[in-house]
Length: 272
Length: 228
Image 1 (cartoon, rainbow over the protein chains, first blue to last red):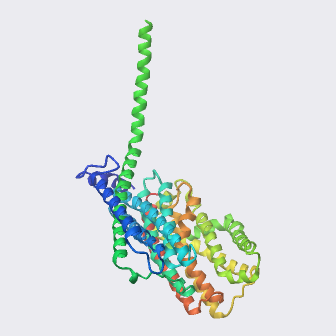
Image 2: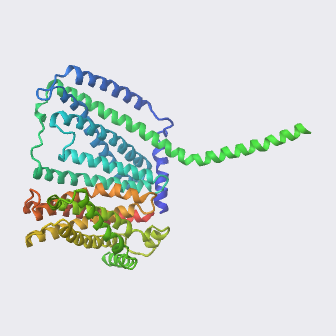
Image 3: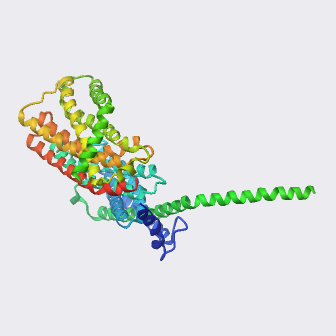
């Protein structure tokens, strides 16, 4: 019990020893990344909405591709990072990996939501429905629910010394589930509804469309890393606040007590 | 490990038998859910018979949440997990015992709901071959459900708001079981487009899930219990 407890507490010191611990929410690196993300997104908007031609089959609806596909890929990467970091939590038992897992999961949820929302908007004009029980859609929706559960577990365990380990186990189990769900829904689709049509085959993309997609993918990845850095720093600082808040409150009360003790002595001296 | 599992499961089932909560509450709950489905679908016999596999497994999944909460009720009292650790039982054995307890209760509920569906939904349960498929699917699916349930039940021991958190965490995780078991039952009952060969493939997928969660549970339970 104590060995793991100290493992979780002591590790950040050794990790943070060579590099200074974050004292603000942003670093120089994150600011540069933020500017790059913004610039690439601007370029992506220009290419995606203006320069690239409308699709032969889907006309302007196909432009959703430039936000839909990158957000899906970033979401998968983010959840992959959470799963990897969860394994590292159990292995290395450091706070750093725990906070990376948590931060990445939250960002993954945001990107999954963007992916699902744009997918629905795209599905309506092209498939005629907002939602269809396609393998990929079902897996993605389940992925969202699984990691919402993971974040809910983190919230419920706030302040619990075992949070890192338990959440890591939950994160790994969520990750184990994803390939099984994908497999099952793939079978399901082949058994039940073979007629789901994807008008936009991968082979049809080329030239400016491919370039626009690539820009947005790079922008998405930069945005992910940028958010991850900031979210990690915020989480790290929040942990420090939790640790120091009690000491700070005691110090505050002490100074108040000293002040209130000082006031009557002045008053009595004045009275005399 | 197995001897420890038997000790734990004997203890849990004895408590369960004496408290009668399972029989007095869990069984009526499953039947109420079955009846509610009939109300919701306006008691159209054809729809109910067609949808039986799905309705049965949703009922089982809802009952699973209650089963898992019940089986960990004893351990949720403060300090009792420490007692469990001090008992010297192998954590893997404790996990298997808990999972076995859930498994046995689920099997009983499955038999009951199948009879319930036969009576309430007029579902026809066909030939010997299809019954064999159903029995195998139910057995394998229950192993997976029980293992996942025991794991998440232990994970949430002593967590605030665990009653609401358990369904949120557990139900998405067991979604593949719902898909697999429903499809296998469809194959057995001939309600979907699923052939019986495909039905056996679904049993294979259920087995993959069961093996994955039992193995993971055996390895994860030790560290999980360590600091409860």
